[in-house]
Length: 274
Length: 290
Image 1 (cartoon, chains in turn green, blue):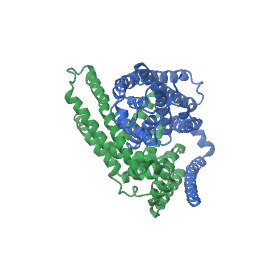
Image 2 (cartoon, chains in turn yellow, blue):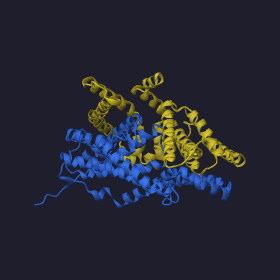
Image 3 (cartoon, chains in turn blue, red):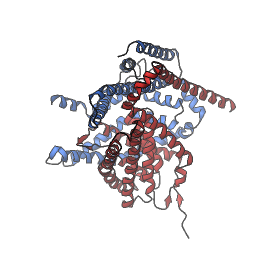
Image 4 (cartoon, chains in turn purple, cyan):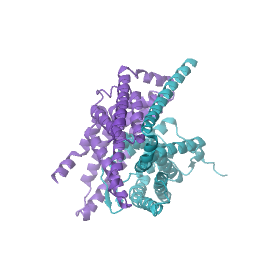
């Protein structure tokens, strides 16, 4: 119980905000974060798709070790990893229950383990790719592979705005709580309190909708004074923006090392079957 | 004389405003719902699936297409990429289905002051989205399980489970998190939020040119993208079943299979590189031409 309380204390609005900011901006000096976004995309294509076609446990384990190493290198925040683990456990647990329900037996555990391994390789690979880059780099990278400028702008904007939005939402929610009257009885399973909180959570969006509308207008006006709409659709501007992206020695080295490692574990997988 | 309905048009910056507004708010709500735990009582799932009322409200008040698209992109950015849960290609299916459902909900309403219309639109939007999800889920099992009909009771049970969760989502999430809040928000925001974006409120004198949203290109692209997305989703869902045919697959081809798979992955990566390089060259060519 104490552990639950301790954990509940940690998950506060403030904590989440700090963790998210850390994820977004806290680790852009790591080795992987300094690679070119396009290198990481290519890398992600390898590690995000290949696991689906691999059925050897040795190779999957090797891949898993590798992406765990890269994830540690990117210093992803704990909150993100916690959510990932929760999701993975939930998914496989659910499948296990469903399979048992439909008359399977425990022999299904091994394939499930394999599936979990595949899913973790893919999730960790996407984490390495997308959480290591700062939002600006991610936006530039996406732009360089042909995603419209609006989307890449939205990503940088979203990351910038989110902490403020989170703060504002929290303030509105708190002020509703201050002015409101919480239910006197919790009800069975706390349903009264839960219903009250959910209602407040939804009501709090009303003021936020209005203030966000004002903010969206300011943003777009500021964007327009710099010729935003024109810039999004002009190839020269894009070229200018992306001029600083360069695939350098480190990128080739990173890809080469990953490939060598892949070949290496494939050879090992050829001789050793787990 | 019959009054000619004016087309509801927005300037480029206004579209961007709607997009940003919808993206930020739905993204924020998505993060909140991701972090709220869910309760299961028997087969009934009391989770806050999503705060569908935000995109619904915005689709009803503003241009449905941009609001819906913004919401989908917001979900992917805030709910997936930021929390490190980006599923890659499977997300495309989500994006298309959600945009489509919300867009249709917005198109149903031509007078936001009419509560009955708003209510119908809200429920329809959720129902369409959940229905499409259900179909895609059933299809995945259908394709994924070999001899689907041969297993006694399986088709019925899959349809029953999916159908039940569909009803559960529409009746529980749909009413609590889409219908009621939308009915609360739309009349309150109508006429207040539009001037903040420098627009006139929608009224029944303006009509949406549906044909300009649902162009053949958009439909074709949507179908293609969702097919691709479904293919990848199918791969992820079929994980378990893959093992069943995997056994004789490996027996037949031995370790060649592994090298084939490596080759496939490498080929995909190589293709991406080539495409990127050719795009670069094309851009260079364009620049020279200009």
